[in-house]
Image 1 (cartoon, rainbow, N blue to C red):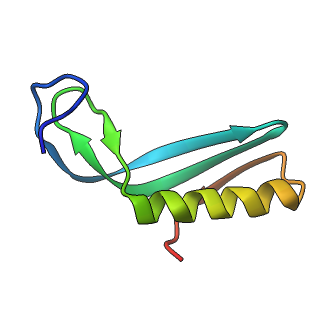
Image 2: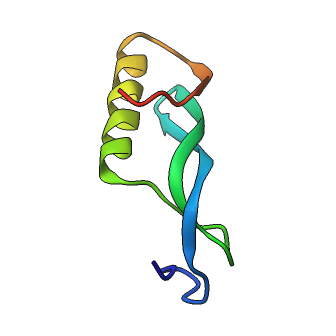
Length: 75
């Protein structure tokens, strides 16, 4: 697909790191599958992956995690 941000690059399958913060909790997920713009590097994460990230983050917040870095594993 054409990048919605730079409007010049095409996106291709790749992986990115995603950082999520809520209150005192910071989570970094590495190796998250995404469509990445070849021109500007903007990443587009699909709905199912986003749902998995948010569910994992919610569990971490409830579990009292303050800072954590983990590899993404699809549910």
